[in-house]
Amino acid sequence: MKILFPLIAVIVLVLVALAGVDGAHLQTLFGIYIPYAALAVFLVGIVLRVIGWARSPVPFRIPTTCGQQKTLPWIKADNLESPHNTLGVIGRMALEVFFFRSLFRNLKADYDENRTGNELTYGSAKWLWAAGLAFHWSFLFIFLRHLRFFSEPIFFFVPFLETMDGLLQIGVPRLFMTDLVILAAVTFLFARRIVSPQVRYISLPADFFPLFLILAIALSGIFMRYITKVDIVSVKAFTMSLVSFNPTLPKGIGSVFYVHIFLVSTLFAYFPFSKLVHMAGVFLSPTRNLANNSRAKRHINPWNPDVKVHTYAEYEDEFRDVMKAAGLPLEKE
Amino acid sequence: MYDAGKIIIGLIVFLGFATFPIWHDGGKAVSAPEPEITAYAKKIGHCVEPEKWMRANHMQLLDHWRDAAVREDKRVYVSSTGEEYDISLQNTCLRCHSNKEKFCDRCHQFAGVHELYCWDCHLESKEMKKWAATDESF
Ligand code: HEM
Image 1 (cartoon, chains in turn red, purple):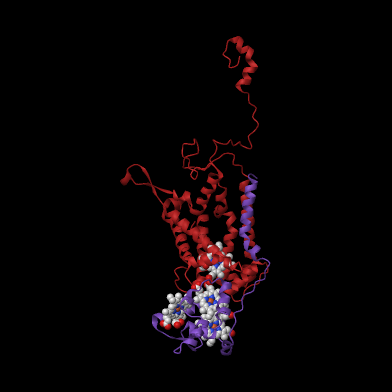
Image 2: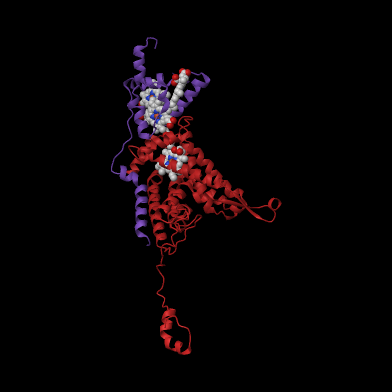
């Protein structure tokens, strides 16, 4: 059920777009209003999310570390694994964002009585890391390549990406490798959630929905590029008219295009409310973005109440005479 | 809000990138390029296949032509309207569309079809004309 429900939801989305465009001729709705609204929800949603996070105090340094902290000068400190300054934090964050460094340490726990007796064993498990990396990088490539529809003259880096992506020069139009990679990676990420019983148990509809949605987006795009062609020149004239807030619908563009942008709009609108906000969240996770400098710098909890304390020195001052008379030892005569 | 300075800078960077196309192109009115049809092609009056179909599918037609010529040694294409064409990028397409810069390239530049590597081997009309002027057998 938790797999079927999101799958049906994505199929319904596709059908809604098809019915809306082919049946009800709501091109204006699906081509103009929904994309604009989705983009607005995306931008405002992300900003509100980030502000919400920023309002939560993080009074203590809670970075997860796995290296030598900076201490004495003759003990070699590991500034990436246990950053002690901003440079270290930036370095660690960059490796995290670009290469998912902490996921690289992902282990799989196994319990096999026949092999290791009554013991839990841990083994290397790099597949999730590899598939995650492949998925995110190909998504980024595809996203950046799409900027050819949103710039005129086209941004300088797009030709380079297209050349690299189409390097194999298979077929006409050139096969983009990232198209295959994203399909393979999403399929793996989906399979991982159903093959392993533990992972399947903890997976929710909210885990499957984004996978199906992104798969449907990629498939509709691939369909459009390699199978049912659309007139790209008209598409670009349309996207550029969106960019300049003077939207003019293209004539005679196949409904696949509307399906594609309706699914993309759904993804954008869904983004701030779902686990996908990890895109912004990774930058605000205190286990990553804080320097491990608690020993070098004092961090005071901002909401510490003003506690009335009565120190021993004060206590002694107060009762000095009595204590002296009783013959008790004093710190200060 | 804690760390307001960093958060606000981060958000400005995010919004700046996310809306960059608007800053870059927002004010401009961009219209689709008009591929120029040569006088020769105009006289004939139609393309190999209907124009609307060609706009979206010409690359697949070329792929089909290439496979037909190179793999199956089929050199004649029968169009959907029953006309026969020699399968040749240089001698058929570019005979009518001999203005490659003002036709193919104009669209491709706009649509971001970069480095169309076909011309690494196939000749453009200008080069063909030069060649034809010096080579009797052509
Ligand atoms: C999250 C955003 C998006 C994703 C993941 C995505 C994914 C894809 C993929 C995988 C393809 C196959 C071809 C290629 O890789 O270039 C594609 C093609 C396409 N996409 Fe998207 N897309 C996105 C957003 C958009 C948007 C916003 C538009 C326009 C309004 C758009 C319009 C198109 C068009 C016209 C094609 C066909 C390109 C061609 O024929 O060469 N896409 N998309």
